Image 1 (cartoon, one colour):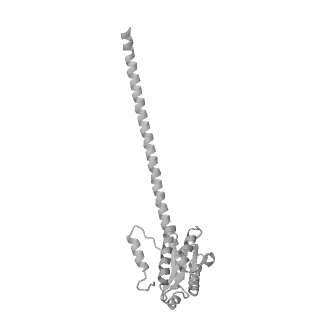
Image 2 (cartoon, one colour):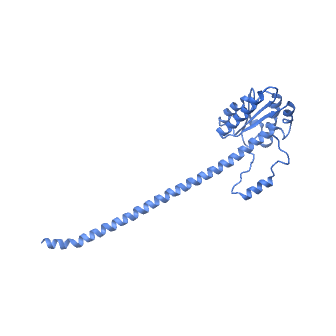
Image 3 (cartoon, helix red, strand yellow):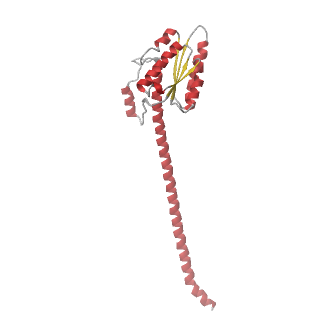
Length: 233
């Protein structure tokens, strides 16, 4: 999948939307994000070039390639399981999965590409850790090599940039949710305090009324006491 100048989103359009809505969360790369890479050895002449693209992006826009963790798997079919292990480890902020599935004369392509994409998507949804699909699915080797050359058009480079952007976005969304939760908590505390104050006030009123009633009863008893004594004599 590629994007051209005609289909690329215009930042001015994004900014215009932000001015019209209540809240807009645009992508912004998290330069400190810890990124793990799961790379398939199958079609390694292609995946190594994709990996170079990932590391270049981390050097230029992230914490540096020295911070990356790389795990090698036999082929693209094994990528989801390794990605799941890393996503659940609690040590990385995002996972980039790299592979190259090139269509041949057998249906092998269909049995690998689809389950790989589905598995990686499921890992991301189940762990809430961004898992970026950096797997080439091409008709020919030539198409694969066209997509892993040097520079920002390298699909590995693009995958790393997506990972950094998603970490940044999810961090902002998590901050929004935390602030909202804190607001709800504060409101609840205020509500509890108001209820408690109302309870104290009610108790105070009840106490005053009880004291007033008791005083009035005592006064009536005192006034009637002589009359009763007189009649008794």
